[in-house]
Length: 149
Length: 155
Image 1: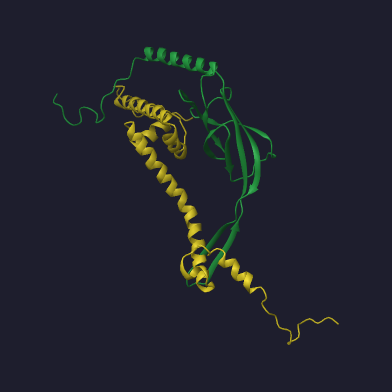
Image 2: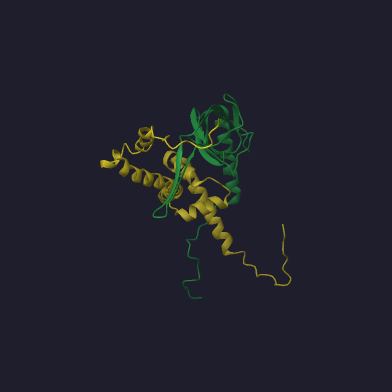
């Protein structure tokens, strides 16, 4: 005989409540105060901790990039260049090092960073000379040739 | 004509050195560096390599961990081809943007292929009975950089 529904005198009891509680408390053991011992307080703190860590993982990328930028700016000021001039001239000379590596070079390889600053300075001066002018008059609007590459 | 604020550009005027003399000086420097490389008068080399969509500053006997799967077995030797910069104590070779494959050789071995620690992704909105928890485990690869070699073929 197969019974399709359980009889009313059969009751289900929770037997692993201890382990379910420990699963949450193990993440709260290093907290301060009663929230490292009491489950009710710990649940709230652990949940907030997880949410903060997920949001921080996205912020970390922004924070680190800002840190690298300040470091590169400070290092280039030691060589007489400001950060925007340094970065823009490096990119114009087709040197595609990212900010993380530039910051590491500024800390651990000062000679290399000095040579990169000199490269950026030279490219900057060439840019100024090119902007000043060939001295030629611009040709007529309708007789200008448009290049499509 | 009277001098106004717009007669001269706001940046200090700088003269570039003579191009002929500069070319001679450049050729001398390149020859010197070539001789130094051929004679082997450099200590430890460091390189900046573009690998797994990230740039790494590496030396020999370095460990690197990346957050993805490499299609190579453990113990395979790998040659990294996108080298952006190579430097020693007295000279650096800067690539625009990459250095030639006949100039630098960076070799690495795959040591370990594991998974990362279980990262917890949780979303919660208060007073709205909304919370989601997801455990993310990323595959990771550990590489050991064996050697960085340079060859004297500058021009």
